[in-house]
Length: 112
Length: 114
Image 1 (tube, chains in turn brown, red):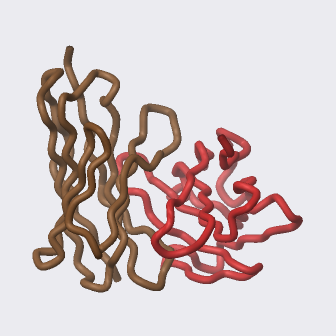
Image 2: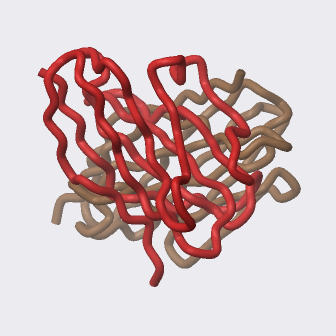
Image 3: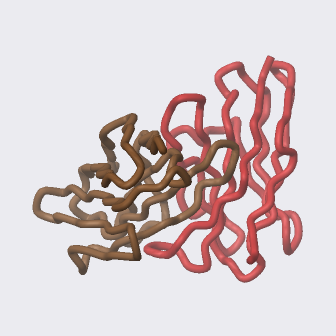
């Protein structure tokens, strides 16, 4: 089955800095890669996703890149703000299946 | 905005008891899921449900677990004979289609087995 590794487990940045979270996956048949943000005590919410037919996707301050050859994908947050502080999870889904395999999560702390 | 709702938010049960966790998926969604997250660990897939039957399940989802859609709105997870290691946050999710479509998560039910 799929295995997703996520790094780092914690990330502290100053407000305005960029943050990068990296994930690797094991199954080359994976074709869908969402990123979820979970604030303390709240539900995971999708912030951006990417499918295997593209290499990069951007939505305002958030971008995701995908390298299918290396089987890794990354979340980039620019101009971080304190409200970006949360746990971020990457996930992968194998083509033809609806199951999401999650990484362990990254706790992002943005200091004012 | 439509949401997946779960009840209860917190459930405490004695070891060996049965619990039922309830979820109301988003109304036009066809795929339903249960995931769990043991404290400090990753979110793990348990089961997916489509067209009134289980479509996928993980090795975690053994005979202790069952799912049901008893009516047109609820989706339940039953855990029989609970064990201490079943203590976790259980998330329900739903998606409009399977595969590469967004899964919307509920806020979770924290299950504590004592």
